[in-house]
Image (cartoon, rainbow, N blue to C red; front, side, top):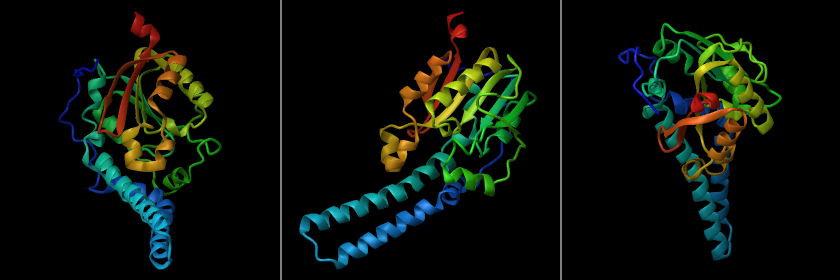
Length: 269
């Protein structure tokens, strides 16, 4: 269950995002997609307008153009809402997933870190570490490479392999996976990763996993792009097979889900 964690000063002033920082990053990292989508819609509109097409084909053409524009503009609007307007990146909801604030935590990302500064302030004076598990062989999305080239990490991370984290056994009380774990596209690699997390955590530790899901809300928002996300059942299956149980799950906006996992032994104790 979620709780009001004791020992955390909720009046802490956390790093503030710019008014359009989140959606701006989306455009910067994915500009080729938006350029192609915009040019495609414009070219399609010119073609449908100039060519003499059967009525059914003309209607289908305008419908396809409308759908393309809807998903292009809609994805930006939803990104602005999720990353800039909603409470998600204010992080004030995060302490509630712990009965007691963690004394040792690790934030694991895969190329873009926009949470470690907030975690350091929110859970001060806990001992926090930041790992970067970026692997160009597995994480082939061009947007990740652009993000790494354009953004300097606010906290210098420790490079790591997903299946061999440079942390001792039983050494952390909390693991934060904030829009990062889905970049491990191979199910076997995700299973290795979650088993490695089981090794490094102390009894009673929790994983906080934040992700978009392959569900109806994200299909409406992102169209075919929702295939980049994983379904809820895949996260639950991978966690269960690696020794984790779901302690809590809740929505941060209709488009983002927070999973809180704890060890099977902690659930049954």
